[in-house]
Amino acid sequence: MTAFDYRIDSRADIGAALERLGRKDPVLSRLLEQTGIPAPRRRAPGFAGLARIVVGQQVSTQSAAAIWSRLESAFDPLTPRAVAGSSDDVLRAVGLSRPKIRTLRAISEAIASGSLVLEDLDRLTADDAHRVLCAVHGIGPWTADIYLMFCLGHADAWPAGDLALQHAVGAALGMPDRPDARVMAEIGERWRPARGAAALLFWAYYRTLKDRSGVPM
Image 1 (cartoon, helix red, strand yellow):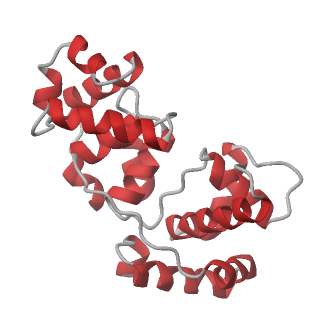
Image 2 (cartoon, helix red, strand yellow; image 1 turned 180 degrees about the vertical axis):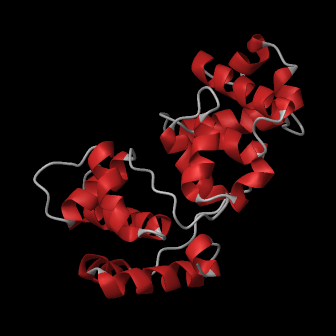
């Protein structure tokens, strides 16, 4: 396995991975011609990076940004110990829901106990790192994969439950219905060990579909 198979830190990494995949898959080659090489969408790793992904779940981009700004202001710096020692009232005041409070507390406790060592995840395969993250209460498959992709630059993460990704894959493959997470997991096998690079390409393609239709999908 070469370095770019494991990391997608730059546009060059993504392009190299997609070029290799495109030699074997004409669908990806065609999409790459349409969209160009996607830009990396990197965030800082660690507790704050994971917390930001949790905050952004199932809310609009604007709402997530507002909640995150208030959370950063309330905790400077934002650390597992600070979250664990705060009251629910403080966390609710910044706009966090009860489930998200429970998830952030569970992450903080896992880090404190040593059952979750975020610094070790980039030394694991995507599947193994995914299992470690999902063992923490409140972290689901989507959250785990988004952290692996955007905070660690892992080339083989595959967020099969992402709706935009499902729409794009279904459209690109000419499927009559949007594939669900189970079907997406099966489809993604063909793009190992760079499923994350393929996901970035499909998200770029999804944006072209939205622009073409003129309405949100």
